[in-house]
Image 1 (cartoon, rainbow, N blue to C red):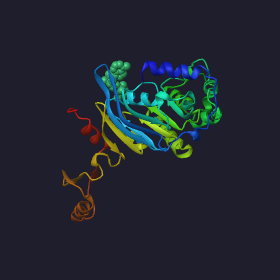
Image 2 (cartoon, protein in one colour):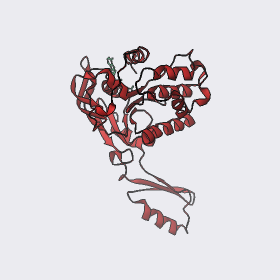
Image 3 (cartoon, rainbow, N blue to C red):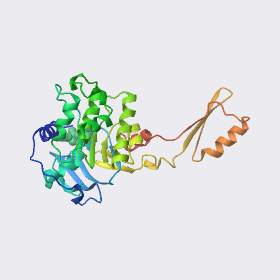
Image 4 (tube, rainbow, N blue to C red):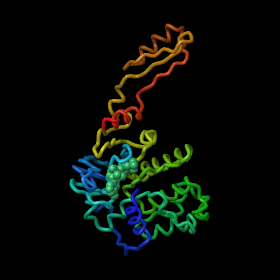
Length: 309
Ligand SMILES: Nc1ncnc2c1ncn2[C@@H]1O[C@H](COP(=O)(O)OP(=O)(O)OP(=O)(O)O)[C@@H](O)[C@H]1O
């Protein structure tokens, strides 16, 4: 996250705007976001070099890519915190560069530690942010939905890292956003906290219809959460699709391994069923040490973003 985004976002949420209620349904929103030919250079260096994608309402869309690929720059342009050099961008039916302040009520941004008003309690923090939205959710319900009910009266500075992230999410969703931006949301989480966080995000999408734009370096996170992923490398999208089939994964060869009298055997096949059936019958009905491994999303990702890029 860039400092200027943090500063702008922080001032956005702590400085009242003189809020005006707007019916979010009045925006043209056949797509939650539409991006065409997006380009952004820093000096002579293209950070984003001609990116196209759509985000459908209600879906969880993940941007993956190595450090410096251009994900944050893209997301900040969609959030309205950076100006593009070229291309068309529409978010909730509006160009973020021309957006009225009321457009912000429809988007939620989960920033790391934006809720760090450490002397306030969890309840006070969420109520504080709720005041700046015309259509805010009930603070107690939102705190409950992120699993922090027992910490409502705890001071923010006493929370663990994972609990703070939950509070960041509570602050990100208190305005009932239609589109939620999650930038590397589970960095530093323990495995259980990550699973709980994933459940929270899934339920936001499933129960509230919230659209989510996620950036992450965790491929299991993308696989667990995203309906679609786009892999970005050197400012371009190099693959896009369902994480289960990305890069021809579903049709790729499968590795079948088993133990044969103490010797490890391996075969590669695009159709493992007949091979496993044949081997099993030849081994008298059981195949010791059988493993059937399909290409992982990480394998596909590494091939797509390899050193030749
Ligand atoms: N304010 C800036 N000034 C100059 N160059 C920048 C600036 N912000 C980003 N860049 C450069 O633009 C490129 C893309 O950066 P960006 O932060 O968008 O990548 P990213 O995919 O989000 O990376 P990460 O995964 O490390 O967060 C990088 O080469 C980066 O050094």
